[in-house]
Length: 390
Length: 100
Ligand code: SF4
Ligand code: SF4
Image (cartoon, rainbow over all chains, first blue to last red; front, top):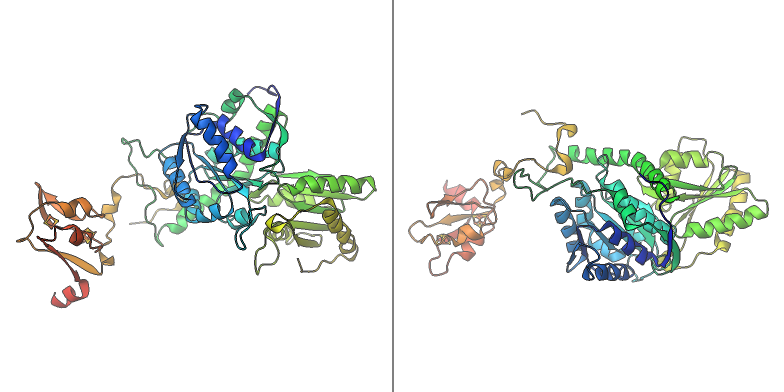
């Protein structure tokens, strides 16, 4: 593979960044249904289709349930398939996202994160994709439009890898990323095509010489056995995500891992988050570092599979940890990210952890809020105890 | 038959064989059984076209019977059979088993 490709910087919104990546991928089939804040993304991509910039068959369906059903059908027929959705649209896909994962269709879907109703709200939080965390999809989260673009391209490789063959969601914060214009580096079309390579279908239902039965009934005799390969594929995914991230780094100068450690090496207090808040948290760390405080930030890029080993390692020197969740898991012991982090540390000599729920329904989070969390961690670090309260 | 382990199964729960639904009997799920009157039937084959389980058996263009191992008793054949002919009646299985 060629090293660093020619750099081209353009300004795009997060939605445009997905559409641009999709244009370059040139998927065979894109079944789609509009929903705020994803609508603009598909609007842009539909433009590429009607201008003949891509050879994609754009299937305009009557609901998200149909969009995901068509995606599974097209994938089973041997096509490279992509789509996008948000919030209630993802909720309407629910039945079929599990089927996409269990039938091992490597569909790539952008999820423009938006709060799930009710009350009805169109702004960002992670209740949509967090609800889908057990569906069997890979989940990559993006800090900004650049990462959105890069994640979409890598997701194609990861999902289609012969060791993985699972669908992948690329999550981007609704409005905060999807509708904000940022400069970003894009690759040439040829670089993208070389990077993703030709599509090697998992299934090819249209091959009448080798007929097979897709999606048959499965009872207590084999259902369990059919879950096991899904588990194993998820277990193999971290290696693939890392090696694709390294390869992408060689190609573009932007390397990706499962997590990103920001000034954590000597940090006593560490804050953890995912999505657009990562940028705010890094700025807060910079401010506090200037004042001589030993603070750091840990970004979870890959939420599914959860990078247990990497998180453990990154937190091994910390004296107190705060986890920021942009969704609620009602009746549970904290937000979804918090529960994962705490489980990852169970049995280790773990620092006390405090969970925070923030930004529901698009409420702003600013450096002061994160500074406050770092402040509270001071007491927790010195007492060595956190409250169970999130 | 020894059951296969998870490593021996084809990817994604698929079965690398076509038409294998035939090997799986689903007729026991039925509540109502289609009973066809051979005398009335004109062999128009509407039931054969519409049956979602391909359970109407046909030979040389004539209905020869109903595959009760796969018929789920949905009643579509009764509904599509031309009303003037009305060759199919749906009868509750429990009534039939009493008779049997
Ligand atoms: S009842 Fe339904 S399944 Fe049975 S033969 Fe009639 S149409 Fe087919
Ligand atoms: S629809 Fe009625 S008349 Fe026509 S073939 Fe079937 S049973 Fe006979």
